[in-house]
Image (cartoon, rainbow, N blue to C red; front, side, top):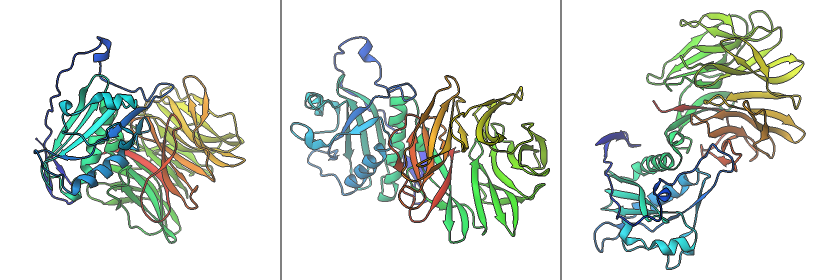
Length: 443
C-alpha cells in the first residue's frame, strides 16, 4: 500500500493492484515484447489511443459524475505526450461503450480496424472509488498497465490522472519523470517579480517568494530541495537561496554589483556570474556561499552557466568573439569549445542532463527562436518558430521535454516542446506574465 498527499492536504491511501489480463495466443516471439516508443531516437513514432467510456464495476452500476471529470483530466494530460494521438471514440465501429473494463470485454478487432494501438478503460466502484484504470494493446490483446486507486474524491482526481499518466509514459518510453517534476517560474506582480512553482501540467500553483523587488533566474538543486536565484532589491543584486521545505530564503551579498544566473552542479555547489573585477565571469561559491575560484579563464564576459547531470560539462555564454556565443567547457581539463557559429546573438544555454544536447535562444530576423545543438554530431536544429519571441529554454530531468518562455500570445507564458521539436503547448499557469522556467524532480 502506498500513501500519498492529495490536493486536499489530507492523507489518502493509494492502492496499487496487480490487474491480470486474459491470456491470448501470441503471434510470434518478438511480438511478446512490451510495446514501446524510442522518444530519444530519430523519427519518433506515434501511437493511437482511444479512451472508452467510464463504467461502473458492478453489473448494472452507473459510473458517478466524477468519472467524466477524471476522464477530462486524463484526456488533457495524455495530450502532453506528443507520441500519443487521441482517437475519438465515435470513429470506432460500434462505438466506445464496452460491456466491461477487462480484456475479455474488449472486441479488439473493432479497434484495430481504425488502427488503434491502445485502449484505456475506467471502472468505478462508487463516487469515491475505487477506480480501476487499464490500458490494453490491441494487437496482442493484452494488458500493458493496470492501476487501482481508493479515496478518489474530486479534489484528488488531478493527482490520480497525473500518476497514471506518469506510469503509462514510463511503461511506453522508460521515462515518467515529466509528470513527477516541478517547474519554478518568474511571475510578474506589477513592478515586482516573484517566484512561483507548479507541476508542468499547471497543477498545484503556489507562490515561493514574497520579497518585493525582482526575483529572477531560478535554478533548482538536483535533489529539488533548494532554489537559487537572483534578487534585485534596495538598489543591489543579491544571491537568494530558498529552502523548499521551510520556505526560508537566505539573502547573500557577493563581491561586485551584479549576480547573474546562479545554478547548482550535481554536488549541490553553486556557480554564478559575478563582476568583482569589472566584466562578469563565472565563479564557484564555497559551502558558506563565499566567492571562490573562476571556472573559465577569459578576459571577456562569461555568464549563464548550465551543467549536465554529472557535472563534467558546463555550457555558458561568452563575448570573447565580440558577439555572445555558446561555449561548453570540460570541467576536468578546463578546455572550452565553441558551440554556435551562426547568428550574432546566442543566449540562455541549457545543457541536457545526459550531456549531449544544448538548447539556447538565438535572435533571428523574425524574433528570438529556440535552437538545439548536438555536441556529438555537431548538428544544429531549430525547435521553435514563434511568432514573436521564444526565450529561456530549460531541459526537463528526462532530457526529452523542454520548457521555454514566449510572448506569442501577446504576453509571456510558459510553453513545452521536446527535443524532437514537437508542437509547443502552453502550460496553464493562470493570469499574468511568466518567464524563466526551471525544472526539478519532486524530492
